[in-house]
Image 1 (tube, rainbow, N blue to C red):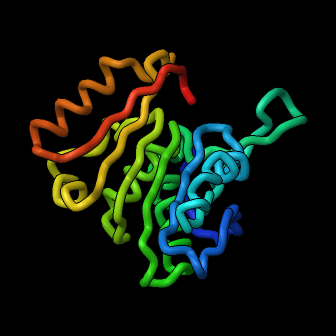
Image 2 (cartoon, rainbow, N blue to C red):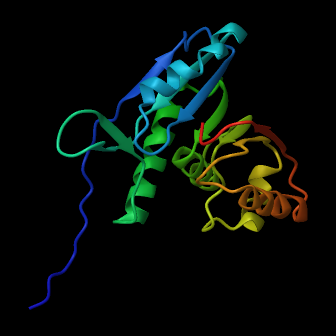
Length: 199
C-alpha cells in the first residue's frame, strides 16, 4: 500500500516586529527578512526611516530552525522546496492579514532582503494589496514569476533594486539579466550598487 499525502488548514500564530508609531506614521514599510535573518534585527537596521516620520514592520517567516546544529540561535525562513506552494500560499495570506490590520488609509512600501525579495515579489504578484513602492535588496524577482503577467502590477510601483558588487549569491550578470527583462517590458526601475557583499 502506498503512502498518500493530505493537507489540512490550521490556524497559526505569527509574529512581527514594529519600529516607530504605526498610528501616527505617514508611511509604513513592511520589511521581509532573508533566510535565517532575524526580523527584529532587520527592523533595527531600518531605523533611519523613523527620521522621515515612517514606521517599519518586520514580519517573521512562519518556519524557524536552529542556525547551527540542535541549539543556540534560531532563524526564520519564508519557505523551502518542500510543500513549496502551500508555504507560499500561507505567507501570502499572512502578509495580507497584516496589511488588513493596518487599515486602508496607510501608504505602504515593501522591502525584501535576499529570500525576502522573492517573498515580497510573490506577494505582489498575488495582486491583493495596494502598495506605493518595492525595494529588492540583494535579491531578485524569482524566476517562476512571469514578468509579462506582472507588468500591470509593477508599472504603478516605484521599483528600487539595491545590490552589492561583490555579492557571492547574486552575480552582476543575474542582476543585469533582470534589468534587461524590465527594459524589454518598459518597466521603470532604479538600481543602486554599493561596494560590498550580500548586505
